Image 1: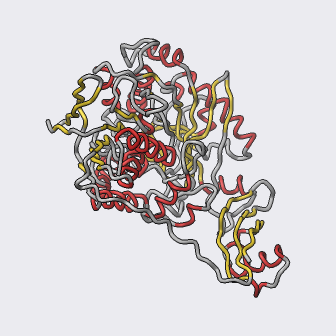
Image 2: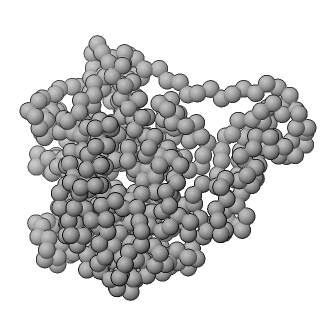
Image 3: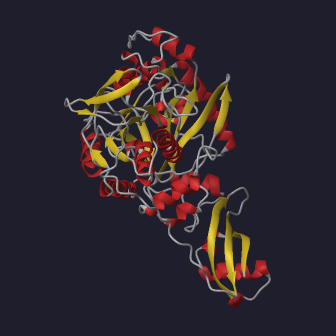
Length: 532
């Protein structure tokens, strides 16, 4: 007999298979010897009370053999001689999952990636962190796997209506991710494991006749009668296909400018901008788990915070327990900080974006009043938010003094507008420079954060402390541009074989939602082109 059972366990109990069987026996009113095994279906942490529990839903096998859940399997067709092909611009989660879906349907994907493969990319990241030199084509945002490769590997999404989340997780497991991402409430792979998984995806695409070409930066479209007839790259190569997927990610400003200059419709899209906040992980553990020392059977604690200030939302973003802050800039003279965690989340710090929503008027007025950053724009400019984002990043770079040293303050000092005399030890490798962030960030960002930090300190006793540092700026939360597309076909309203997709087009907000959007676009292409 198979029986579905829900258990509420202490963390140490979950670590022992025999103890789990004992708890199953108690819950089912049977003997422990009747249980031949179990499969976990869902697991989450309940830290609402003084005692932290693990909530587990499982299927127990009682007086019948355990049926181990099979690893996910997928069948990909050889498309080397396929009659239809699709050019995919960008090898991030959207591009990769678009390509895999096309393989399943017998259409050849041709991925053009401006950056390098993951192995070569690591060398450029090391130079960025150690020497403060950025490669505009190979960094935390550009290269194989896109920003997703070095964005912590969080696979949690609320976008359940946008696609099949289980299928996306199963594909990750198929390519080497740990099986627990299939049942953890907040699945996470880790930046150290993602490169091997991304490489396995690329090798699968190549093995089945797809093409994967690095160092191919898109520089132009040839358009005739509302169809793209070819795309051009920086090295003067030209590529043709039946359809073209634009999956360039949220940081490809040159692509947004290219579209605008070629009179291809784009729209300004609101996003959120703010800072990275870093605490000692032990402090976050003590707050969230109500303890002095974290139970070794519990993972490092995380948090999610939200506040409203003068009709502006303020919220935590991309929280990285046991994580590291990193320079996510894509060009010289511009400073962006992001965060990531390894699979074990075993670093001594916890960092999170803390960002603020704002309006067109906020962005436009700040640009006009800011004498250091002269930008020609208007309230109707589809690149308005991009110009604002770039101007803030330049101002932060200058405030840090160069080489991607980041301007920072202790949290309480930030709220008092006081330059910190010292800064605590931290995870940001290029280094921090103490300065007054209210002189760096726009007033509406600074004031919203100031009020929210005090509020968050009341929600999480101990959060508001000078042990925490505030680092500017977290500005790549999502794309500042939306590339419109038809709801039914997925195509751009002006170009019948151009498919904007993923975060860069404004239709996703993380690895899983980007992957699902890629699959959705691939399905639209298959419907229009026909497939075997």
